[in-house]
Image 1 (cartoon, rainbow, N blue to C red):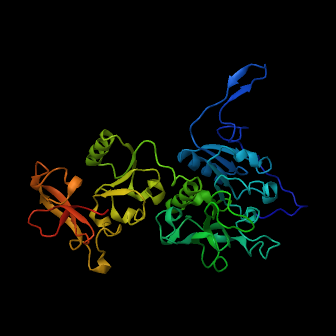
Image 2: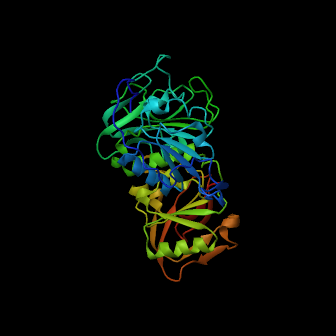
Length: 417
């Protein structure tokens, strides 16, 4: 929402605070006094906390629900009541576009907590863009566009791209989306396109210590495109970008999990159930998602990602291509999307660089495979009856663990370090 004109007032609903009604992030544990003077133990929780600064509209409620689904305990406050101290003890701060920027101003500028900002008129207060007095201002260094639903994603921007690249429809119908013109040190993950000024960024970020406008970033910062009412129209791609921004700002890409987690991408077949059970027996906490709703941000915190052959390749494509976690892939039509084999435009394709054999029960295990050969060697029966086996033709950098007998270079198990 634009900065308020000083003499202009408007009615606003108070945001019903979720989870905790008055506590700031720092009031996480400890003794306190009740009205009768008796000491009691305050609420103790190990969940990471998110301070959500918002006015409380229906879009804010959807964002709150999504933050909870990501594992955050949400502390919601209005802009007028938010102080810098409220961020202490939090893992994340999210500022909604529903607030009046004058009600918050610069009070969260110096917090060391990661912040995701969707109120463009706070961008300059936070040092994300040039201010009104620094050759910036409304529709110059920050602003909005009233009717857009597509972003151009830079697929090389890591977690913030959510594994997407090129044009992505982020809202089901055109919505108001916000933008900023950040400093040259910012990483731009997405742009709005023709509806915004040249170079306008829809998603941009500063790493801790990066030079922003007038200060070094005290913590991670993200400028995010989500307009005041846009959450109600977000597509799967749009939510994936929101989740990725939240996780990056909270530093979840930097913290290794204490318990190993396996992300299992599958469509829920009987075979998938057996694979999930085996992963659990190996000591993994198994998180299951279908291919259509799996994004790069889902891999954060996982120790391994397993992709079942039940997944429809067109629903997942290459969104996990840049995941910084080990992948175990059994869907051959994703091999090329992930760069495991040559794609069709590079001389590969179905039954050329990847495919399946409808009736196999044995593998030829290579002697040089090491741990991946499980101590086996030569031709080994791996199923009690003939089954469909998949294969790929990896490049020379891969270690080929097993081949389909009599099928030349068709590798049934292969790996890249």
